[in-house]
Image 1 (tube, protein in one colour):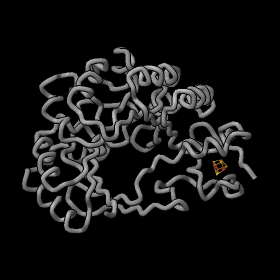
Image 2 (cartoon, rainbow, N blue to C red):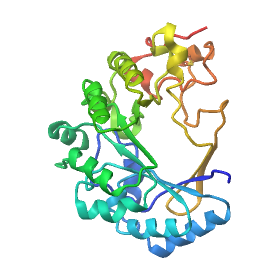
Image 3 (spheres, rainbow, N blue to C red):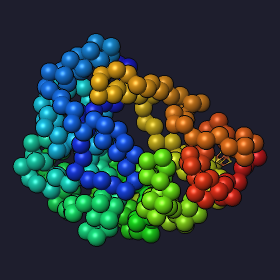
Image 4 (cartoon, rainbow, N blue to C red):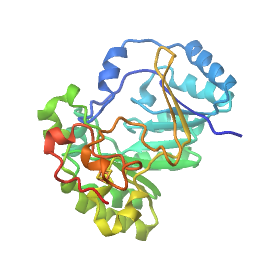
Length: 312
Ligand code: SF4
């Protein structure tokens, strides 16, 4: 059967306000938009008829949305494979985990910090994710198809990345992605972006190299989306560049809350660049130009481009 993946929404609110979240501008516009069970059913039947068989709930916090359980039940009835990303703020509650997790096939956990103080700094709330209990509940109620932790690098966790990976390994997480944040300067402004979101590449790379070596030894599937290839040591760049493509899926169809298609990315090996990364003159001369993500948009406004060293 052809694998066709739909990225969609159920509702547009979150119980956190993470310092780096690129969805806030969209979320603010749709915060009061209501969705009924019927809306969800209509959408899922439409795309089922078009051959879609995999649904991703990628943004905002699903487990607090009023119709999420209904949506899961409908998706399952229509035989969709379901991928959900979550901040896990409610999954330590036994009743909550037992109700939702049995419907979910693939789970991606956002893990930016383990200790309370850092979690609250990054989430800009008083929330505290009880990670030990969350992992216990996942073990108890979820049926193990695809489980991954995603760490977004921020100014507040850039020095604890290795500890985070070690903790996740102790919790038997075999797939980890460490993502350099998107820099939405128009929304967050330069001051917030510099202070809370974006470290220099050079500030993270030593931890990243240590993590790559650790993950190799521990046989953890590591992905490093959004790093330009040339910030890695030149002699090993070919090895590292394999880690930077985090797209497991051939086709993504993204739908806005109003139901219309907003974006369609058909990805192949030669076309792994769905985002609007800046093509800088330096990259034009690099042998990795067609494959590399390049530096983050706005990176040069924050730090210049002296770290970008084309590879000829
Ligand atoms: S010069 Fe540009 S294309 Fe080449 S590795 Fe660096 S960021 Fe990527």
